[in-house]
Length: 363
Image 1: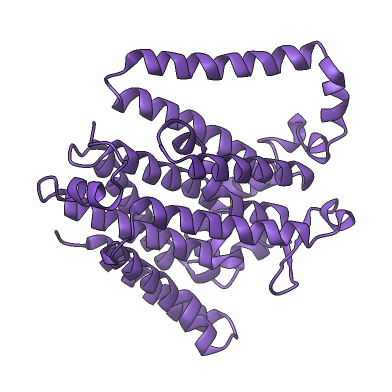
Image 2: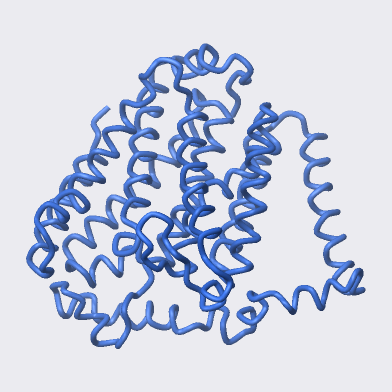
């Protein structure tokens, strides 16, 4: 199975690294390690990490997700409320400031796994850890008045319900029970708010995030206007160096691909877009495969969807490039699973050996 995805990634960050050195006066070692070695090494780790004895897909994904959550948790508890009110977070390790939206990226992966932990995983420890981590992530986002994670969390959960309904062709009664349960929760919350039970309306209005949920600060924010406006400058100028943001008078466009074009030019940005499309094609192949179990499909689907939405609204490579490297690791792992699935039932047998409590594969 030819790995065109890896070839595209190499081309992307070869041109990215070369252009970055051209436009920015940073050390060669830093640029080389962050914008060339990091994504490639992460991808190779993803291709090979499953071969380690005792390692399961679930362990790999939860180690990454909980690792990022722990980072975000330490940042949050290290930040005084007065700084939180300004939508800034102190980085626990470097003492630098992070924006509230970039801080939300640390909670994205674990929050996207809530559906999997509740309805698919059989491990109580996974259920409890994910529920606690997701609850804290939502709380932290509300306190820092960041809506991005809340939107990603909601969309990913609903998308998992739709995927589960499509893939799980048996146990129709269980699907009805699950959907009814969620509908009742939504109904209870709606009635509680409309009737102001326990003063819930006053409580919500007192939260920092309530000041950012009006129409003017929703989809009609300057962020989205700048994304649309930046499209006019993609082909002229052809090069990077931050010329688009200078034209618009902003620091970032808040979009992975547009910010890449702005930073290092159209060629690396276009190749990065091609790479992103190739990863999406692989996750579609994984979901459609009859040789890959339901557990894997939901795990990878959750991470891909949440990461993709994060890429659409944040300057990831400029803000937290290690988050993109993590996505490359997951891409490599996805390719490995797809490759193994082509050998009849091999990936299923591996899962049974490494995690005896897992179910046999389903559609």
